[in-house]
Length: 169
Image (cartoon, rainbow, N blue to C red; front, side, top):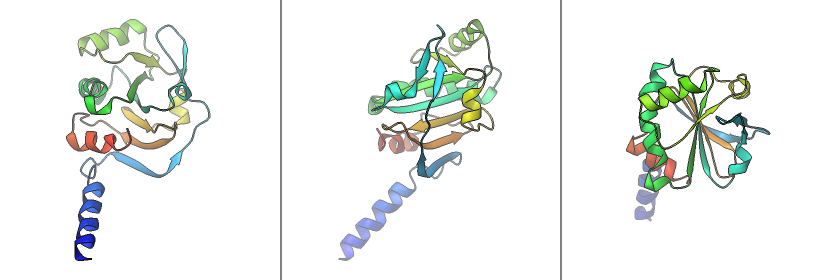
């Protein structure tokens, strides 16, 4: 019996502290459901996250003028190819109505190769998600429900973050 109590105590503390050191992650007690989460690719084609049910999704909202966005983007790029997160799909969504050339230059300057830029239609998603600033990343589970968000920048290479995210993969 003591062993069982000790085991429960240890495993509970391990899981509870997985991302506790990353202060800007908000994990929802109740998942949030949205009807239409639509944004655009470079060819102005609509992308709806419902098309990606079954995948873990990360929507990262950013702008070229945002210094914290610039700092976190390379680690976000590496996260997309992390072997432990093969079911993860990252959508980096520019919210500033910036030109495709400016966005492409931004990606090229940071050597971003593992995902493409996407664009918000006149800030509709920024309003839908009540974004208070950039960068903000919103995490959706395999059912398309928001389970957490990251307000501000983080290091996406952080092992604790990756281990925590793997539990949703």
